[in-house]
Length: 192
Image (cartoon, rainbow, N blue to C red; front, side, top):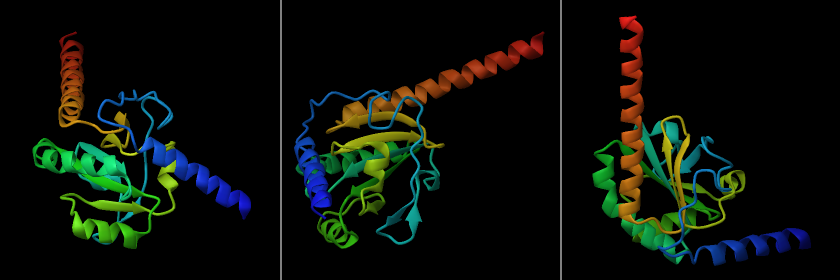
């Protein structure tokens, strides 16, 4: 029992200190430790405050922005404000948002969201399963996933609206370039 309490205290201390990351926290490349490498896939199926369960594949959009947060994390509140303002713009461009609360009971999250509503689905992971599985140690963390759950962007700490717009633009433009290249390759094959 003592060992479990000690481990929990260490984890809480690390998360608490990490939560203090500010807007100048450097972006972690997709090859960073939080997800285990470029092109890694992030899969989860969590309870939604709206009822039922949701996963990134349920979003029905080309990109899913996932914000990992906690009610006690001050910078997470700032991140939520940034994302709430950005949501209508990016939603119109095919990006769905999920807010994933880590390590807190659903009742705590529900009380917080009643006072500070989110315009997008809020999911709960009371046992920190996702944080453990994907080495998420800094809050907030924002991840952009493609339709298959592949990590396309990851930032630990506060992500500015400009940084997120830029990341979405790069992903969308990269897709267009790949598609254009595929079309060109098809044309070359059919011409020969």
